[in-house]
Image (tube, rainbow, N blue to C red; front, side, top):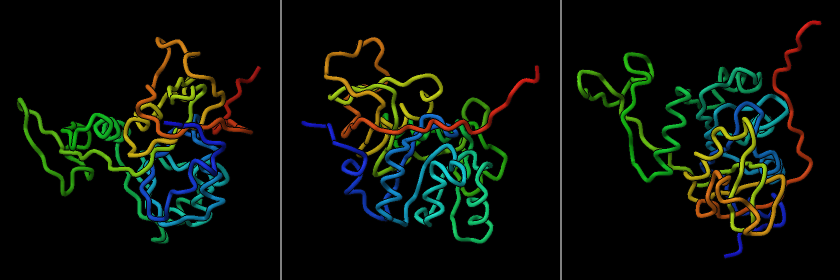
Length: 231
């Protein structure tokens, strides 16, 4: 099975409007920049995006929001995007805000083939509305369902032609969990090497989870919030 694609456009060219997408990253770190740019160029819409956050106004998922490509956002933090706020308040965008740990665990459950999990987060809050509550050993837990995503778009530092991935630093955030969870996982990497060149002990995502891989270009790696110490 040849998993290598020439570029982002080739890798995402069959993603249809109305798809449910997982997008890796934390803030602007480790986001699939090339895949997002290709989706913006393709102008598909009616998308449901599962991501820790919604990028900023002019970068990341924010670019898709500007083009009105996103129907629904499922996220844990969205505070850096003014266009997101405008669409939410105007009723143009459906939003599901969930605790960050719940987001991660629902990704993990999907990757492990578990239909649902019971979690402590959100018990006794608005998060628990209309959800099943069950008591285990004297504590209440919420029933949370695994995500059902058509595609997972992830970004890694290095990968090989079999789809094995290595992440670097903070980019090893939601990417490994989402890579396991998509029906089709598309990975973009900064460096693509022949199979066998990666140290097996350093691989974070085994290639069995990755269906398509390509070497990305022109990574901006923007810093979301820059804090400088006074001398």
